[in-house]
Length: 108
Image (cartoon, rainbow, N blue to C red; front, side, top):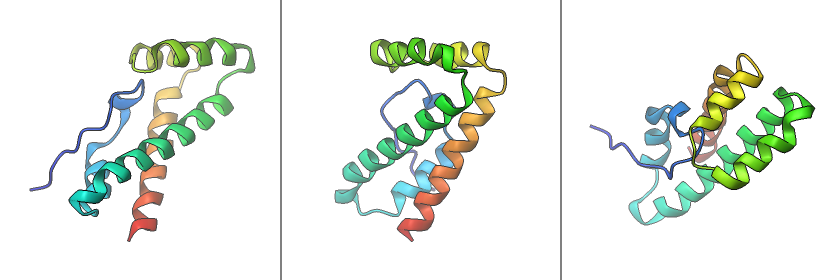
């Protein structure tokens, strides 16, 4: 049975597929996992932020970035995004899934 590795909480945490996170992290030796988690989070942060900014209307970018700066860990940011742009949640989920699959392919 695989472990379920815990990533630090972010506004998009609830949208992540834990099976893919487990697959990525289980491929590393225990002493490498801390660095692997840091790189995974960094990759997801960049990919998701870029996708959101491309998908979201320009007029609300500053408001969104202020929210991230002040309450990065608040899952209500996802609700706010979905209110601003219908389809944002599946868009974020797809970007996260593709990013994790790319990481899995690179680490094999």
